[in-house]
Length: 142
Image 1 (cartoon, rainbow, N blue to C red):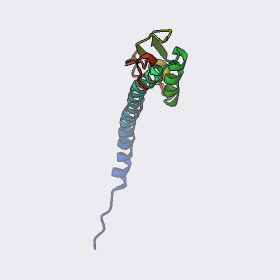
Image 2: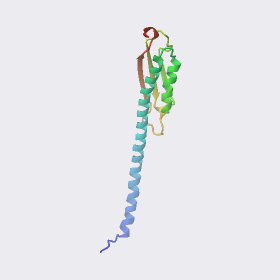
Image 3: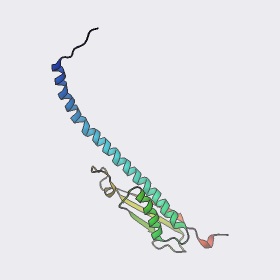
Image 4: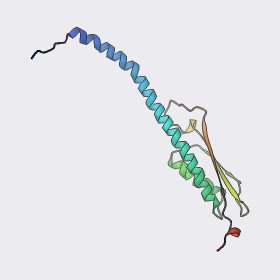
């Protein structure tokens, strides 16, 4: 059996090319990796806002619910996702027995809720809103 011998001069010339290729490819890999993380985080926040709006509105349709209870219910869902900065608006601001619908609107700026330094969503925010009819005691039949 014949053995193939490599020329040592060819091998040493190749190691410089490997270093250059590595230096060119690694920044692109990091860019794609961090972009994927940031887009995944943005998608998670978008879905959690929808869920928080719905849960807040559900808390508001029950007779006797207050706007503070509605905000707290929505904020509990946002806390699960680690959303630290958000604006939760309940319409009407004072829920009474005559209130027929409750609307919960949540606005989350992505600048303040990013996980990593390269921010792909500078100045962007997600907003969602859910409106549900309230349950009224005078309409209930027992």
